[in-house]
Image (tube, rainbow over all chains, first blue to last red; front, side, top):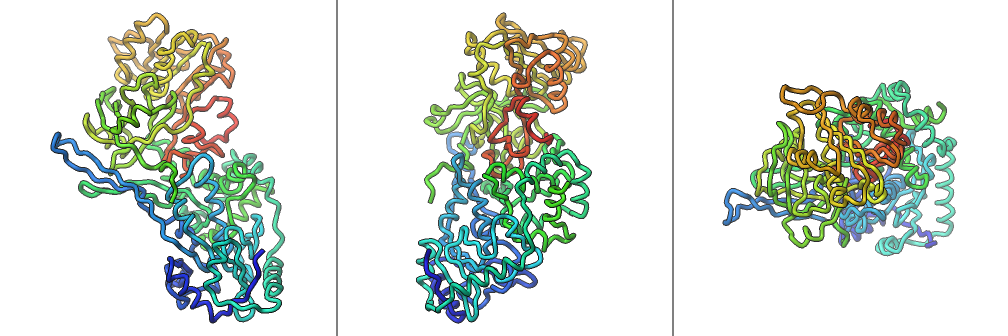
Length: 346
Length: 278
C-alpha cells in the first residue's frame, strides 16, 4: 500500500491548479441552496465540508448526451427520396473528479457491472470511465441519512478511488490508491508528517463508530420476492411518494436512461437522458398497457432492483452506496432504509 | 477509446416495399444499405430489431421474415404511438435505421422431430410467422405442423398471401378464427382458446408456440395445459417498452430478467418462475 502523506490545507489550491492545467477538474461548488459538481480551475469555490447535493454521476454519465447525429440529404438520382448520414459522437475529456465522497465514487462500480461486461460494452460510458479519475474525501462524521455501512462500504472506503484524502488537523492525510492516483498526488506539494496515518485511521474509526449498527441485508432479495404480490404493503410504503424523481436523479447508482430523437428541419440527433423509474410513463406501452401502473408497482421495482434483482445478478452486491441523498432530498421524507427494513421484518 | 461495437448505432437501411396488412398494420420490407453487412447478416427466428425513424425515435419489432429468406428483413408494425405513426408515414425508398438482431430466439433446433402447434392472435402472428416459415423451409426436420390464427374480425388478418399458400399446403394445417364473423367469412368464429380446445391437438411429443395480446396468451396457456402440454413445452414471446435493447436502460425487466436481452422468448415454465409483472 502506498505511503500516507500530509497535504496541508493551504496547498490544495496549487494542486487543483496543477491538475486543471492538464485536464478537466470537476468539484463540488455552491450554487444557491445546492452544492453541485462543476468545472473548477482552483480551490476558491470548492466546497468540501459537506456532502454535495448531487452525486458525481454526471462526470461519466451526463444528464443528457448525444448518441448520434443525423442529416438528411437529397440525392440527384431521386430528389424526393432523402438519403441520410448518421454520425456517432463518442467524446471523453480527461477528467479528475475532486472532492467526491467515497459513496458517490463507489456508485460507478455499480455502473461498471451493467455498462461494461462480458455481454455488452457501452462505448459512451466506457470512454468517459476510462478517462476519469477520482480524488476522494473520506468522511469524518456521518450525516443523518448516511448508511454506507449497510451496503458493505464505509466512511473512508477507497473502492474506485485513485487518491483518498482523509481530513486531519490542518489538512488531509493523502494516499494514492492506484498508479494514476500516484501521478495525481505527485502534482501536489505534500509533506511527511509523523503519525499522519494513525490520525487518518482514528478519523475513520470515529466516523464509523458514530453510525448505528448495520443490519444484515443478505435475506432481503428473497424477502422482496415474498412481498412481491402484496400490493397493499407497497402502497403503504409509497403513500407519501409524489413520483418527483429527486431520488433517482440524485442517486449515484441509478443508471437507467431514456433515448429520444430531436430533429429540426433536415438534421437532428438521438440523445440519451437520465430517466426516472418512478414516473408513470416509464413503462407505459403504446397499446395502453402498463406493467407498472401505480407508484406502488414502481417503488416495488425500484427497491427490488436495488436490493434484490441487482444483488441476485451480481454476487450479492447491493445497488446502493448508502449516500442518503434520496432520503435527505425527498420532499415527503420517504426513507428507503425504512422500506428495506419493513420488507426484511415483514 | 473503446474499439468495441457501438450497440446504439443503427445500420442505415432502405424500405423496399410497404404492405398494408389491415387498417392499422403495415409490413415493411427493408435491406441494409451496406450490401456486405446485408450479406453477412445472420439471425435466428424470434430475434427482434429496433427500427428507427430518424427524428421520431426507435421501437422494437420482431424480424418476421425467416433467416432462410434473406432478400429482405421484414417487420410488421401496428400504428399505436409516435414511432409507429412515423413508420406508417414511410414509403418504398425511404431510409430507416436498423439495430438487429437483438434478444434470444425460439429454440428451433431443440424443436426438431416434434409436432408443432402455433397459436397466434392479432399482430402476435408476426413472431410465429418467422418460425413457421423457417420450419416450412426445413420441413423434414419437424413433425405435424398445426397453426391456429385468430383475429378480432375477418378484416384484421395479416399476411393474406401467406394464408392462401398455407391453406393450400398439404403438409400443414391452418385454422383461422375471428372473434366475430361476417357474411362471407368461411372460417371459424370464436375465441382462440375455445377453438384450440375444440381442435384438440395432441400434446404428445409436441411443442406449442403462442403469441398475442396478454389476455389471449393467458387463456391460451390455460387451454394448452388442459390439452396436456407441459409448461416447458409452451413457448411464448413477450413485448415490453424498450429503449436500449441490450439489457442496460432498465425498463423491460421482470425481476432479474430483461425481456430485450434475456428474452423475448420464454417458456411458460420460465415465466412461472418470474415475478408477476407482465
